[in-house]
Length: 283
Image 1: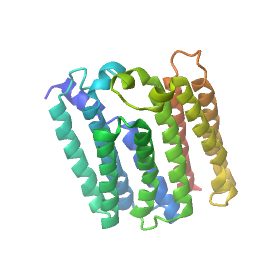
Image 2: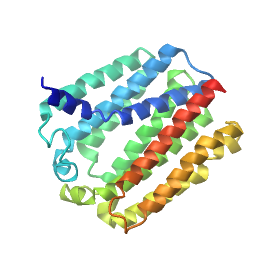
Image 3: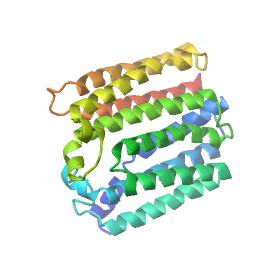
Image 4: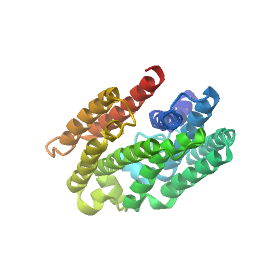
């Protein structure tokens, strides 16, 4: 196997996204248990969701070749770095690794991972073109990472876990709608029914802006309700500042390249979650 092919297969993972999913699981476990879990559960919980998330992303490239030829011609399949057969084999291997890791945790964990994988598969296979429904499915799957974190430690019904599940689901939904606005031309060619295709990119961006403002409005609730101490307002506040600034830029139709601001929102959320984990462990 050539070096280029290995790099092409590695790019299919989009490592930062499965990593973020794993971080959500770890934080969900911490919040549910109110202390750091047994390290074996942390590793298995992180690994199972990392691999299942990666499997969904790999399948996304497999099923999304036509629109990628327009929106992202540099992706591994349209650029010729890897074949569709190789991508399918890789997705199978990664899926089995994720399910094995979850099976080592508990039966509820395995069932949850299987359901999340099925949602990802159905989205990539059939429901992606029904983009509004697809956006909701992906966002709910992202939110499930926190609930899965609770399942890993046997405490999935803690209110703070469900709050963070809703918060990250909303952030992801806003990102999905905003990203679709950037990909409207390719999605229209692929006959995808995204909000950007149905309403126009600028209208879709306004909807994503409303979602991001809702995130900011509710982000302080864990502190106000006494679930977290006052000091946790710091990472939340910094995340909100980035979200507000990026939302303002996304709504500026005079800017040519607005895609980077979707990434800024994603990175600010990930950074806030990591800081909260560190604070929960050390404070």
